[in-house]
Image 1 (spheres, rainbow, N blue to C red):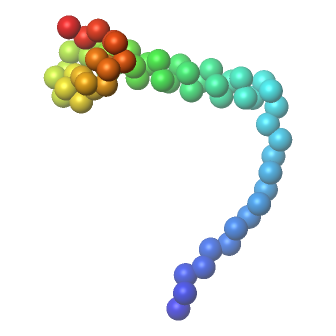
Image 2 (tube, helix red, strand yellow; image 1 turned 30 degrees about the vertical axis):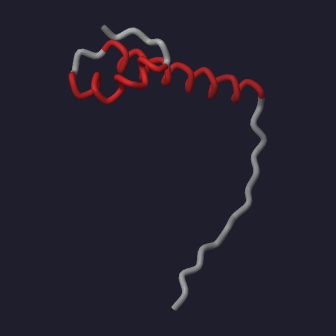
Image 3 (cartoon, rainbow, N blue to C red; image 1 turned 120 degrees about the vertical axis):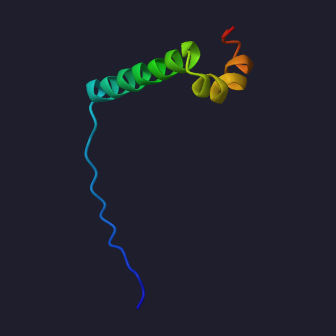
Length: 61
């Protein structure tokens, strides 16, 4: 018995103000994540992001 899926194609227009809200929200989320990983004193977080921070010239020491 094959597995099938139905594809629905519904397009909704996205206004410029909605795009701006989405972009600002995504930027704030990204900045919060960078701030948390960059200045975290939790050793696991520090070690997980260590090489990436240094390659991006983000000081952590």
